[in-house]
Length: 202
Image 1 (cartoon, helix red, strand yellow):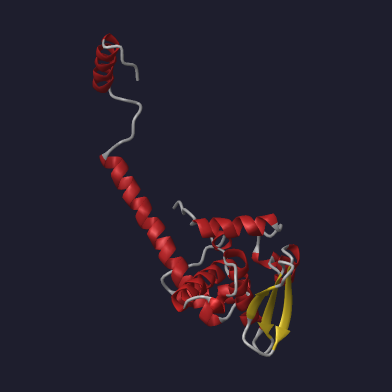
Image 2 (cartoon, rainbow, N blue to C red):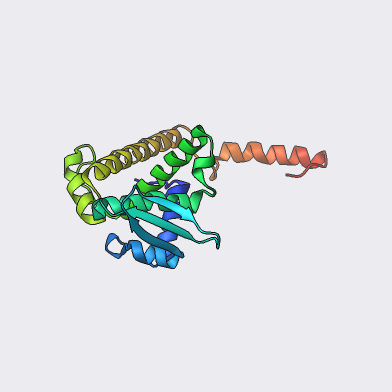
């Protein structure tokens, strides 16, 4: 099966590779933040991100939650750092919600990257119970997060399989050229001769 990654999945893969990260065991929130000049702080409130006057970002993580949830929150806030600018609370509600949705989508792909998932054979994508413990352990995320990520990944894999089946079906119905058949080559030669007589070249 050929899996075509989305632009977001490719961007995240390229980001990780630029940081020298190729496997889940190499993922380190502090290393990522340090390499990209993002400061991590902790406070007793919901996690959030602030842009300083000097242009640098600070991500404040909720110290009351688990390390797994802090990693997920980091992914969400880091999505804002990479994708959005400005102070969200000054924006209209619908636009703010759009940015939150985008940051959530980024979070799921960033914390459990597709290019890493593709390196593993999760035995049965349709039985999530097989994959959830693996994702929890491998990517240090919560059970709820792992389940949502696997549902999305399962849907993507299924779509990739359907796309491949459709492509094979279409190729069998409409074979690509060349090589052309002798009959087609004869017709093309006659067409070229006719066009040359009229001074037209292809």
